[in-house]
Length: 294
Image (cartoon, rainbow, N blue to C red; front, top):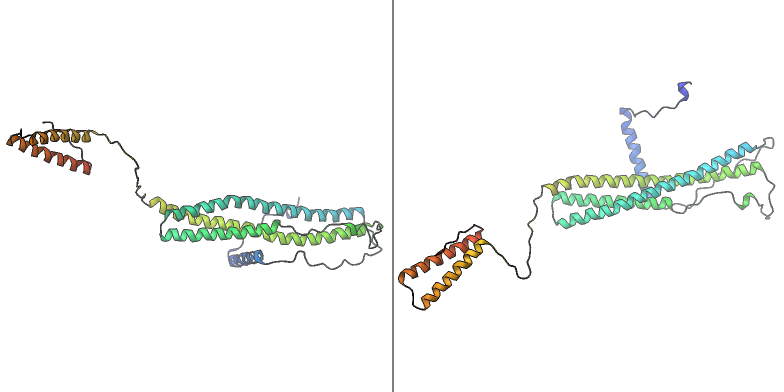
């Protein structure tokens, strides 16, 4: 087979033509954004009437089938475009809770870091792009006029059946196919806008997530404050030693009150008080203490 009859994949753009193609991409993006918010008429403009059929030309059944195929292709394209718009809705259902969770998480951190502020701006921008994409998808799947052969193809103005004509049917099919193709091109712009804006929202969200993740990983965890309500029983060897010293000191004080202690015992009592005070100070500092029995 002649290789010239086999189509080849598109070739890459030459380096010198890249600015031109980038300009076309940005103009297309601007037109897509403009089309999302602009109202349009419910149907395409009427096309010119087909010229009168040459009486010397006979329309065959094969030509009618070809016209029917052209009409069916326009209908299949409409279904395909609506399915693509509905698949975009599925992606949005996943992205909306994700954006809300990220926004609530960042606000809950309660920080005024410049990185966090920039992240909030990017998250809001992502949500705005996703909103525009949602509007575009809604307009794509909205009820649109669809031309098809109806009563006028069978009945005349007086309500009588027309004499079947293959040429009349073929012309009607071509007219409907032309109008439906124009409407499909219009819907395709909304589907394209929904895809582009959804992809842009995902990219902006990724850009916002990377620096914020680094900031949160490097941030020191905030101290946790715990408030205890009710009584708490604390038991340790240090507290048991202090309790024993307090009981011994209480007995010595009682003997002192009964005038049954000597001067040496008073000195020993002072030493016990000093040791008890030292133990309490060590407990407050978290230093283990040793017990002394006398």
